[in-house]
Length: 234
Image (cartoon, rainbow, N blue to C red):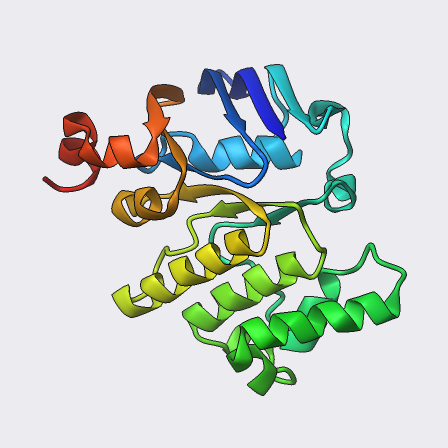
């Protein structure tokens, strides 16, 4: 489904991504784990077209994403849930969700999508007329995920969904990711909480200073001594 090959990304003279390659197959949860500054967010931003690659290739179902306008990503079935939520604070919950379906001309389909989101996130339904900026951090994360779901994606790029949340809400967010996956959506997950990410993923890649140092089945990485020492606090 998604193939990143020999990708290089620079910020000026600084090499942020140094020739990484990985794949995400249809129906998988694949996680990128690593410390701050490892290049996880840059990787997702490059896939989405928010950052330009220096070289390499990114293809999605045969489409060259490096030659695709970022505004067209959602029409390809790619949704991006950014780090830090980035909801529209002065718009209501309902208006934020409508923004997720901006590319759709089918109002009936949009209404059906919103109904599905409200079933998945009852708290958003309760707050549908509330300004997004007044929601709690956990509720804003739900809204960011719900907004992405409004576009009926086939793959979701999720960037640090547990950041800044309480342990209880972290468990809730990961339960939501499982539910999204069970509904047939492929997930590429960036996450600092390596233990939680590896517990739900099929495969994993460890990013260190712009390179992939370890990769394999997530269940195996959970038992890898290098991963345990560096990322699992063991």
